[in-house]
Image (cartoon, rainbow, N blue to C red; front, side, top):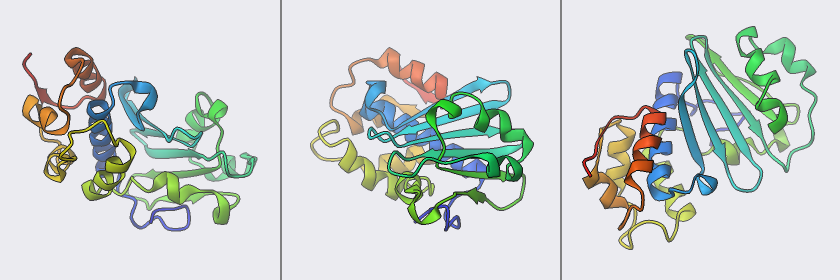
Length: 212
């Protein structure tokens, strides 16, 4: 499992960005109420910057920035001890300082941080790696549709079709296949708001061919 002590399964920036988009698309179909979603994605966070947020509903949170310099992940767990980020200032590349030490990260809090620039390996900072709860927060970030499928089947129980979430559909969306009405209706019996879905897809910048 991915954690601040084990970064081998964390994908490179391109695959991670695609996975975050795909999970946000699937979340937007399985739960149209943003309040109860796990993943959301903003492809126009700022100039040349994209942003992904994960909220587990229990106070745990990941805030992920994709930018020209690389990727940085801010993790916060309510179960981890309060942290002083002074040491992180000396370790973190300057390109990520505004994000990690500004808003919304400053208000959200930080219990661990991961970053990657260019072709460099992922780096991590955690004042208490044995007890930062990073494994549970990072568990779905390995870019594997099977991992998301297993997690979503439990988390979104009651929102998808009685026959279950088809792994084939999850795999197709993880492959960035344009979203169609066929794929949506394979996941849910009745999508309440197709226009809202289109707005979500535009914000994520995910391709779609939906005619209503």
